[in-house]
Image (cartoon, rainbow, N blue to C red; front, side, top):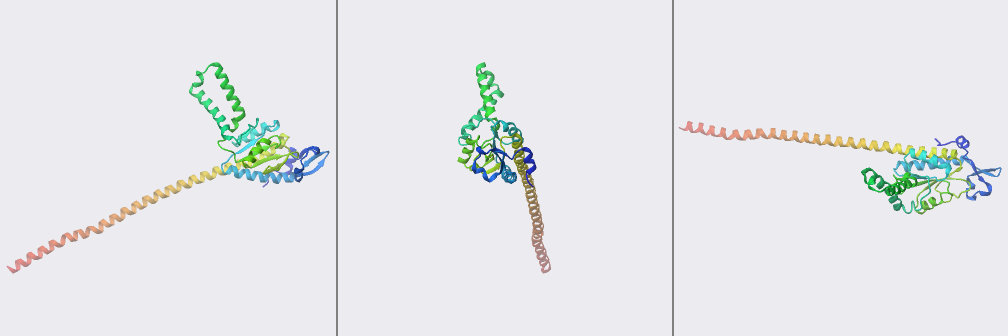
Length: 294
């Protein structure tokens, strides 16, 4: 079943491209026609590309890896924060920090600073500072939270990037390409799709257009996470069952050994009794023979 359909995309205005004079010739395969000097995106191709991108995103989520969403433009900030936070994926909606991917250890140090400040606040160390120092630390904490708070759980490089507006997020795309990280992107008629692994031709300037594409992709990611959870639960139940069988097998072996020992004891006992009785019989016979001779 398709993640989206032609009518949904049409109502959201996904088909509206840029003016003809601003177009990028490399987007020609995804353009349906020109109307009133504006290029119209072929929504049939958009539906197919959304399905391909959603399937790939689902597999990444199912494998337990993260997809980093990047959208710093005004129209996309709130939508991305709402949709992506619901599926517990990292996102960047403020300024893209230079070296976010290529210099990831330094970004992680900045994220750890937030944890250190929170720890100082919890154990009472923060109260020992002067009023000026408290103000400086609080400002630093707020700045870090604004820029990096949404990637606090990103402990390693993401498995993929989802970008809205390739031109605006050119630095993010460049860093991902340098590290061979797959890039999903909404690409408008004015952008270059060459460096994008999963192209979704769509209007990236309208909030409704962004929302309908995100609904499809985030829905697929949520499905992947749910399937991963079910698989883990099954593995856990199977492991418990195998453990019980192993214990039962050990008890069975122990009981079997006990029965064998008992049988051996029963079999050996008559032999011992017989061995003990034979000398007595022999002595009695000898006594009778002696009496007859006398």
